Figure 1 (cartoon, rainbow, N blue to C red):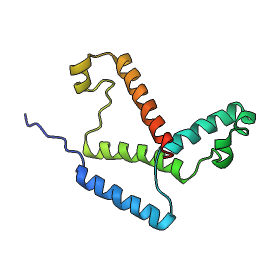
Figure 2: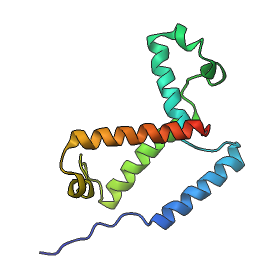
Figure 3: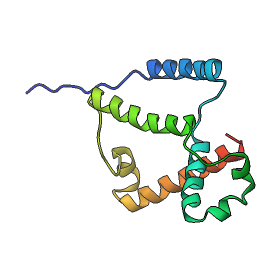
Figure 4: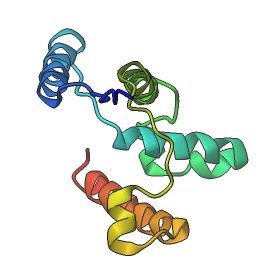
Amino acid sequence: MEIIEKKGWSPYLAGALSGVLSILSVWIAGKYFGASTTFVRSAGMIEKMIGPERIAKMSYFIKEVPQIDWQWMFVVGILIGSLISSATSGTFLWKGVPDMWEERFGPSKLKRGIVAFLGGVIAMFGARLADG
């Protein structure tokens, strides 16, 4: 039986293409791409559905109206593009606990989820603190 090695995209090529995309984004549209603002706007859109009177009073959402814009679509494109990339390279794998995590910390999905959530909160806090 022959074992076929699955090979993903070159990180150098992907990094170079991301850099070119970033330059073109600033040059053509005059905007930097990012993701942290999109999560804040998404939370604002959800809150707008639940309590629109509260969102109207928040100073952040007065200057940044929570709406679907090019940056929100960029984040959706990241999700779709990464799924297409992993599917076409044959590396797509749905796994709740990666092997490296399981070797070090055990097979608990709850523990992995809590740590991933807290890591995301810290990263998002830092990104928003830097106004990014």
